[in-house]
Length: 525
Image (cartoon, rainbow, N blue to C red):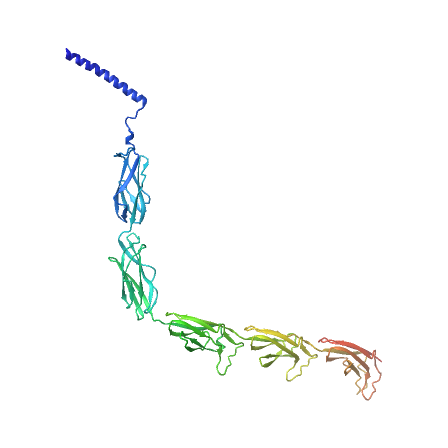
């Protein structure tokens, strides 16, 4: 019996408990309690760690990430992702394998999960790999002086397989040809992967070479050509005509020694060879035409600078010493505009101790060459006809001004001394009318006598009625009184009718001109 009751009690209790649990479940559901996601399982922080913070270019390293809850407890099974701040330096896989891709520098690795980022990134520095290449820096000098050194003339840079500068690499320098030397024999590359040495050429001119070697790498070869410790100067002139004459000059060496040189043909250079390095002075002289002279130059020439300093260095290329030559005298060009073509103008000018006289044809020019610069007075004279005379000119010609000031400058361009020539005398044109040219007895001329008087002198003139117009030439300017006489028939008389002037006296004014002044007189029986 007792056992039966016990079973029933347990059954009743079981039924009651089940109802209670159902009620609890309903209660929990009604108030929304999160029983399946506890706060202890949420990610609060993430940390990233590695065995080293340094990595050689081209190598890999594993990093780890740990997620923790608010209480600091480590959480397992949480999916995490990795990232690199600079993929050109470091890359990272999904599993946290970090690779140094080749470029040196520093990058950071971070991890992220459930929206939470690691608060302290892991900084990893990538360093250069082992030395893989050695190369020259710059270019070799074309030449060096035998026995002389060129500072840092042998320069190299060492890099790894990725092109990164490799500091701390040992470079060995050695001479391989020419008998020179190199110092230092060994050098260590700096932070930029660079090392250099000073090369001294051998004493004998020729080919010199040296090598730079890094253990395990192909050496770099440097080649130089050494030259003797001498130079040269090429002497020449510019602007000087080839007909100006030879240049006989001197050059002074660095020790003060004087040496002659000669340029036989201006514009054709000569070379002074095998000169020790130093400063040389070139003394340039005026052209020389020899004992006979006769260069035929319109002006004298001289150097634009009497001296020229040239620094000679050891080289196979001559240093140019060219001197520009310039005129040192000038030219006076005479001309006589306006002068009658049958005449000559005459001018004189004093040059130095000598008076130069020039005769200039009308319409032409005449040059006075090789005149030192300065101011000169030109004296102009009355025009003439030359030694033979006989110009047949009706008036006298002379300069508009008797003197002329000319400033001469040193130049090939002539300085113009042009003097207009003008008439200095005039013409009286005598004419008569009213006297017939027929009816006069044979042997009688019927001439008309005229006196021309300026108050100081008198000249007589006659006109034949058969040629009733006559010019009186070369009359000085002024006022003149003309006395007209009766017609004159010679000593025998017998002209027949006598003819008288309408006015026995006539006053005219003569000016200097080639245009005649008319003096006409009417005659009547």
